[in-house]
Image 1 (tube, rainbow, N blue to C red):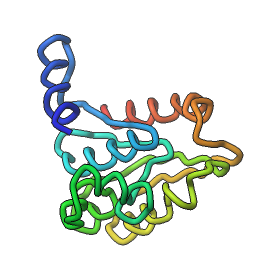
Image 2 (image 1 turned 60 degrees about the horizontal axis):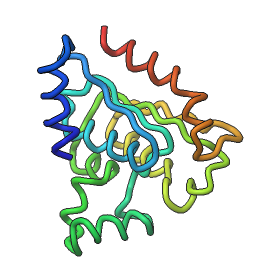
Image 3 (image 1 turned 60 degrees about the vertical axis):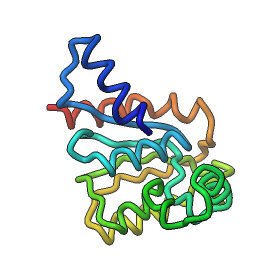
Image 4 (image 1 turned 45 degrees about the vertical axis):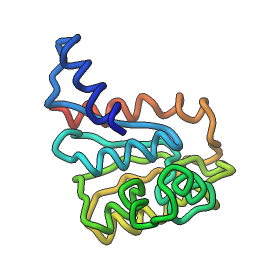
Amino acid sequence: RDYIEHELPELIAREFPADMTRQGIMGHSMGGHGALTIGLRNPDIYRAVSAFSPIVAPSQVPWGQKALGGYLGDDKAAWRAYDAVALIEDGARVPELLVDQGSADDFVETELRPELLADACEKAGIVLDLAIDDGYDHSYYFISTFMEKHLRWHEARFV
């Protein structure tokens, strides 16, 4: 978390002529989970937040419960800072999110659960562009097919 939220942006600002007022974050699967949670915790930094097949509520799914327990222990209240749905329930806000999810992803029903994010966003008034992409799984091919869409979506939010 510290690396993505602090160390990497500081390195980029120091080494490159980047406009640090126009940042976005995206990721895939667990990286998509990270993009959502980091973006939700830092809405003043990230103008655009998107994800491919993200784990959206790790505290509510088997793999996420195992990971959160392993990293953070049994205190489930501490898990909420690393759960996009819980962050939204607790008041975290961004204007909008973009998520692409493959309909043929083997993990969608048991681990990813995009409907939980859709419900949380609807209740919170966050615009969620959730695309269920027919026939795509969890693979590189899925990401590479929709990467340009995400890059253009981010670019439109940097103007």
